[in-house]
Length: 187
Ligand code: GAR
Image (cartoon, rainbow, N blue to C red; front, side, top):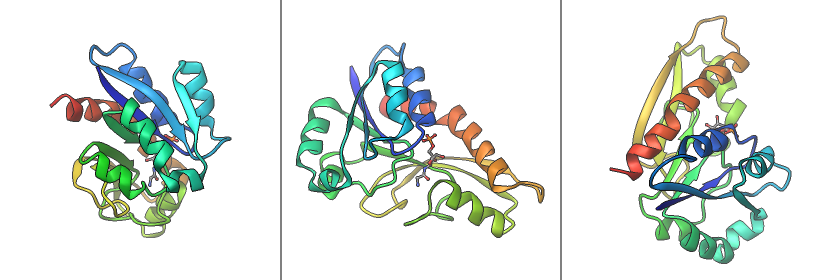
């Protein structure tokens, strides 16, 4: 069995979608959902999905030891699904090309510190972009700069709002993220 741990900070719609996709998978198991936010809705989803979960404070995440030890036992791959902290360097070193993130824009545009969730969609709207999309990429020590694995685009019109942009992104994430993870880990 290939073990996946998911790290998430927020609602967890991606985490749930990934968990559902792999729930009947022959050689992949979601072992843990980990969060840095004790009130993140993703923890409710983990309960419902009967997946083990654990909360690490931002400080504990940075101190790394306990988290790294857990990941070494519980994960072959780490998936960031709306995880808003920088991944500690020790963890990146211990999991080379084994950490995958999803970003709600077409990197290298709209990436970097502070560019997450609705901040991204508002910036896309302000610049009157004609398209946006999702980027699935490996994680390295710099925000949003690891090698790109997959991108998908959505066309935008002048009537789109940050909220409708978020919906379009959400649909792309639901459609592609689990399948791309499956391809990467089984290739
Ligand atoms: C997703 O849109 C994901 O792409 C984005 O946060 C959202 C989490 O939604 N990630 C980032 O912005 C990372 N920079 P979810 O909690 O419902 O899966």
